[in-house]
Length: 247
Image 1 (tube, rainbow, N blue to C red):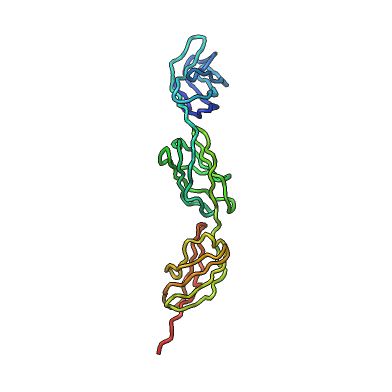
Image 2 (cartoon, rainbow, N blue to C red):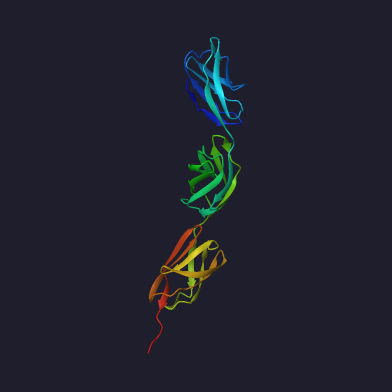
């Protein structure tokens, strides 16, 4: 007498189908000491909505011919999500975050606002999930759905990729040390600035401006790349290294 599914939330309400023989005219389906609501019944199957419960309970069917053998049904407690990290990422999605909590082993979906992703279960206390694309920048609620229910929401922030508009000045000495003002958008979450692949020190003034100090470089044009939580932007050949005079 198979039963599907064989687990559900402690709050009840799970639709369960039991298959077997001589099941027509069922008068009761018990989950432990409690009675389920029968919604469909044929000679070979019964569909019920389970009552609330906890732990592992015996399930059996009663008909005019007697009571069946028992199957085990597992009640799963509601999950708890404690943290999501990192707590922000590109609006385009595609980055991987970790969700920590309790009762996560039966997780089937993680929702980021109106978008959903299928997680990888690491353990009962941890999930790994690739973030889906967001519809726009800003904060969204993150919830985890398991057999036991849905977690209370956490917060995740979508961040737009940066753009680069101008660099002032656009040239400087090959020995480095030039202070360059970078104007653009989405610069507030900048995590790195490079000139020709070399890392520059920088300070963020606001979302539209940062100031970087050029590292030493070879004479000629160099790509300038700003990386942020939302992605990266490149000014191809945006800065020119100039050799100093010699006599």
